[in-house]
Image 1: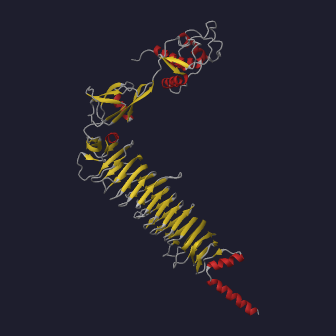
Image 2: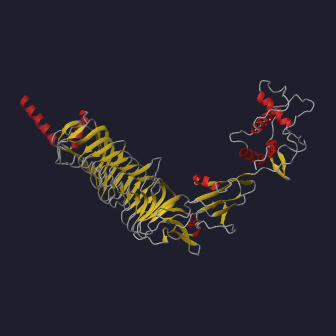
Length: 635
């Protein structure tokens, strides 16, 4: 009897070995077991919805196949797994959905295994969701022919292969993670249906392979993440239709370091939309176009590159939008033989341009034809020796920018006009002026009532000493100078003009019949709020920098006295309502009274200054203007 029982138990145990894992899970549910150990050399197949704890193993010989249509299988890694076989892919998702919870554990091939298979293979129609974990292999981490979603802060590293391969018609979404390959592309595309990258770090150390090689993947969206090639290769080869745009607060950086490869290579026939993010290429182009490609760069920053945008193989393929910023590039825009660039009508930034024609013939067009007013305003600077970028007028309200030979220098006047040789005709911004030639400058009338000319703003500021040495007056609305040997911009700056205030005494009483909320200025009746704003703006612009608008009688007296150099009054001050220890306040009050800038409020109390009585801005302006008239002329 005992022998028969043992035989039955052995037979049952052997039967379990050959049952599908789904059947095992039914038995495991009864026994409380949900663990999978792949140490033994066996194929484990899962055919229904279940959750398993994947046990750690130092010498995993088995592999796992998921054939669970319309089911979700969850695998929770409970420790590190070291794979010691190279005959089969470790996890194959044929049907259904795999959810792999990697935690912080390592799944990878043993160093002793030279030829390996992908760690995770997803078949067409199947799906895998990978959350966290550490994955290491000398083969691909993921081979995707279905749908793959990667979440969390997992690490995916390979030494001799791609991290992720996307097969035809597959879908890949990466929400975060660290991806690194020593020798191949991190993501290698083979005409996938869609790739979306929302965040993550993607690093490649191969000079031959782009970090992300999309290889005509149909739709690609990059909304966040850092994509770098550390040893000179490209960071990105675009797909058929690629859009780069920062979303959900995530930043984008694409960078090619060292070497001479471009950072973003737009592939032939593709459409590339760059809306936001930063692109850098230390020794090459940040973005390079290609034959029959369409390149729309409508925003973002292109910086620290030898060439910001390089136009080749299609003379009308590249568009630069209003929100594109070029920073610290050797050349912002580079054009190969016979190439042009299209720049938005509302583009306001400056950009440098380099033409790489083998035999440069001048004049040489550099932009496509556009609205004349917009093309005229473009601020393009030629990096070709002895040439300048100027506007070419077609005479039909259209025009373009072109390179011509440099024969002088430009003076660009904003809110004003320039003329030469005493002429009255305003110079065109495209007129080149020989250095040393006299230039007359005149500011335009104030753009609106209540403003007056204040000064000229010179750019670059380094040109100011040369201008002033030849008679230029920074504060004169009409002045002249000798043209320096550089291009300059002069901008007229305006400030609020002084309100017209009658010559009544500073402390003249106010007619009680007139509301203090209404003031008569220059015959015009102004409501208090509007007038108050104008007078305060006037004081802000005329008082010494950092001086607060005086609100009381003593504050006004001290402002006037300090501006005059703190002179000693003729008589000793002794106002009883000012602290005798506050000698500055006493002297300021006495000096203001002596110079008739202010008056005592009551002749019956000559010992009282009433220091804390409020003072209006109109009275402050009147006193300030009178104090300025007292100063000796500097002319």
